[in-house]
Image (cartoon, rainbow, N blue to C red):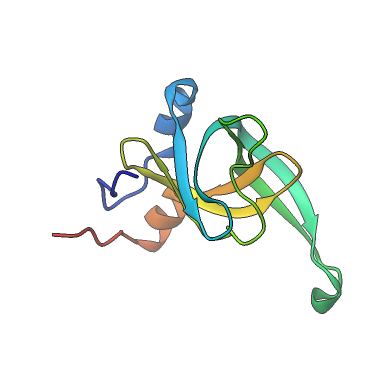
Length: 124
């Protein structure tokens, strides 16, 4: 897996513009290193959190849905939440935060980093 090449995530508009060409990679606790491709560039959905959260229903917008490139394998699974998703070139795109039967839901990082003034610390 390529190390990060920029202190800032790849702008989402740049990623989406040529997403057909890009492979995404993540290293997760549950599934290890997996590769995927963007299936949906802007998904909106709701999730209901269990009894410990009093069945709170939350809405999410402009999330990315990613499928594994290897047939029969998941890009992410339970236990992979929080895994950093990067391009083959080492550009950060987002974090895994949810899964369904076939897709991993990725939260894009570019707006978050921009609005909070965040940067990755790269090795020297």
